[in-house]
Length: 461
Image 1 (cartoon, rainbow, N blue to C red):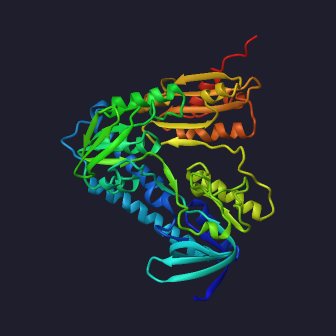
Image 2 (cartoon, one colour; image 1 turned 180 degrees about the horizontal axis):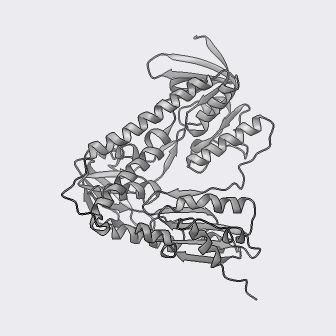
Image 3 (cartoon, one colour; image 1 turned 180 degrees about the vertical axis):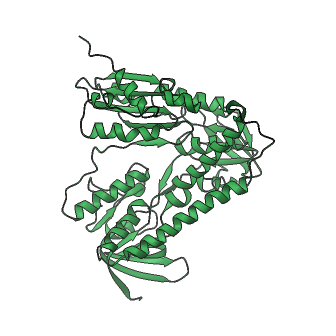
């Protein structure tokens, strides 16, 4: 039996919450080790958020070439070099990897590359990527193993070897015709980017609209954007089977008898938590029917001395929420009484233009019987958009009878940057007039918030 190594804390997974916990504890003198199966730092800097936005920006540059004449730029023939696009992305990822290595070194936290699983109370075995095993023990164990793209059990789909977001970010040629399964954030961002690189793209969505959880005006605006960019959208679609091989030739058979043919498949229809084969049952860590680790509002699992954070804990699947998970656990370890219940969950889809949201939507307010006043202006009313020739979209907000801001949604260029001002007002329960009466530099996108909140209708008499 291998000799166990004693640590103050073990972190399984180095996503946002996990690595921050390792660096925090290490820098405060704890003997801590982080275990990572794939890439140090987790998905965000390696295969998800940051590299995908790098690719999205390259696609934006491609769109500027396509629109050159609009800006008076007359250019000769140009083309997309996907190998160079990929190299540009890889260079950024390599730089991020260096940052992570340096942070581990500075904090004094150790890391081990391998798969961590429980073998008994307070005990984790690491099956090392390089071969061999290590047995680790600690009184505190933190799980941050993230999630992966869901591949639904559709006949022929696994055998077709479809792309997930990871493979899509590694393409070195432009697909002839990409079939995207799923109309959520990941599918939409990559569908638009790859279309702008020159591929034919078809999105296949099981629901009635793209971004089906958003208000109808949002879904309609997003769908119109994609149609205007030449992307085919098939909604209310159920895929009954798949044939062929992604990268060569594939066919999606729909339940209504229709057949969609393409060269590549991208699966972007949901996420599955990485909680399998970890020995969770051996230590009393319960999971939900969806496979997420069951936690309370302090992110404590059903086993003492074990916490779960990020995607694997069922938290909203955003890096910024994983950051807040870390802060919650960190502060509670220091004696605070923080809870994740009722926290703000802002989101931003990095389509072009962006889709940003925080708080209640109109649909939710109506379902819950919450009174509100709606203020809504077109992006055309934000003068900065005229200077950018990016006037598509709108901004809207829900205002309570007592003048608090209940929710905010924006579809337009750069609107993700408008979220913090609105979030601050919402968090501090300030009236909408606190934003309306600001003096904001002209011409900026943020100036649109003044226009938006100047258009709040009066309370009915």
